Image (cartoon, rainbow, N blue to C red):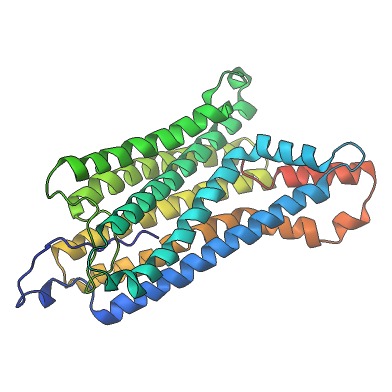
Length: 344
């Protein structure tokens, strides 16, 4: 998660410093250990489910026609976007507890931690924006896949989402532009403190320091992507409900879009809570909103990966009916089952 309760007033007076603490020490401890625990649960879950998913592909292969290397090549070719998304989620959740532990137990003892704080802040900003744009790219691909199913005119080879290079150019290009703008302002404008050093009496976020930067460089992109994903979900849901029969693949597509909307909404509400807490430091409702939505944000990887893949993986790996049928038709069904594990 990105923990951004920032030092909006960098030099408060001694008499008024307590009134400007958005969180008291009890809430700070709760937030810290929730972040560490839930983020750890998320990156461990992502690792386990991803490994299980790969094992399912190996078990579904035709041993007479496919080698292990051919399965790996097919997996990378067909599922590059999903694997890249899982990687971004994994790294994002992995760095969060490490940063919190370092901030809580090690960095607070040093006189200057500005460089470390800057590096961590930029890295977290880039990773979470990457996750955001990954969700948008997958949502678009779901929409285009449905459109091609329903409209033969859209079966063109030159669609930009069919090219991995163009997809990643969109994801990482947009992420880089936003991050580069925030970094440029941090270094070009004196005393801008875009990525500001946290304090012991605040949640040591080392993220976007002030409400203005938080809104411009994170809340605004989140709102745009949330609106786009919501629109795509409505279109896909209405088309699948009125035209196509219900299937596991269709249910998986709709499930991903729902989860993308929920997590995008959690991000946006979290930012609103942080901004309100900065403007009205002792606002209890804003503090509660921050704690609740921070739980959802830290569980993002767990919810998305588990919701999409775990049920299908378990059914394929552990359900006996797949082991009983060993004829060619059964093997083909298993292969199709694994192909439908993803949303693409």
